[in-house]
Image (cartoon, helix red, strand yellow):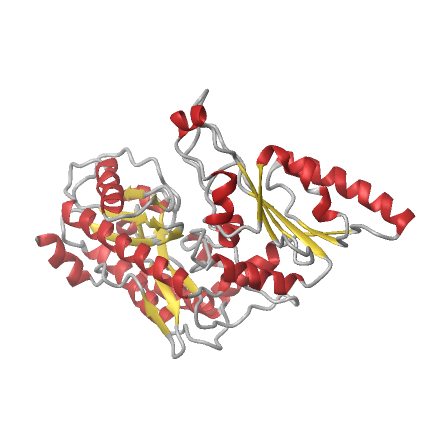
Length: 432
């Protein structure tokens, strides 16, 4: 997978350039403890290499070394504390590098790969040490070019190329996303079955996350949201420390990460297993919109179409509930819906849970769906406590329904549909 990704990237680069990708730097959690390490997504996409303090160089015009890795060398003492390292030799054997060096030789060795290049592909801000080293070389090369007519004179950000490539998933990526989706389904169902009034939100968080790990996931793709009652009207609520009261809804937004690829699902359900009339009113509007929005997804349709459909349907729903008053078209034009529905209906999904993909063309117009794209669809309605001039029975109710969607040749496939979302199906599951 990674070799094909590199070859495709080289084809996009053309001749005359060298690309450098620095893996993500280590971040500290506290005085002497690091956060769990996650490689830079673009670096991983091209290499599959997951160790910190590593750099990838792609030099298509070099006679021998077109793919070079700089990695941490083997070190018995360091490995006692932090685990085995791949090392220089196995960076070639296992990861297919044409040449590998110890990371501490980067400054010394990189010059021979840059000396005949005209363009340097590098994303500033990836790693401060590498930024500084390459900017020094770039400035020197520009001066040298004035005298010799040779050397780098252009710095290019490769992110747009990789964002475009990552938009369409290959078979191996889809396998991992499907697995992440299946594990995500397991976590949500486990939490729904276990939920009881009087539990704390963090107890359900623990059930979700434990299910992910026991099912083979690396862990959670993002901090799990378990928001009960009025907490569900805060979109990225992650405190998860409140006791869950009877007759309230619980919104769980969680996704598993499997071999670096992400799932992302939201379900909203009544903790006691039975929707109240007001909860049912809001939930059914969101559910009907959810289905109708998914029906718009097929090759050739604008990527913006699902969002526009969500605005139309949810605004009509807000009118029917008395949350808004007026005419649908005027309310949409004024963006009145944003009081209760504040975000775009979905995002691309892949190595990042909010995958960084180019969904607009050079003119700023939205692209159309193509087979192999994966995105979420997550309409919602959120009526915060204290909102003025709305029916009081809806105060403190937040509902979101989210699934992961794969665009296919003939339409789309819901990858996470096994988590119940029909009112009757949720109530039946929770009876068990």
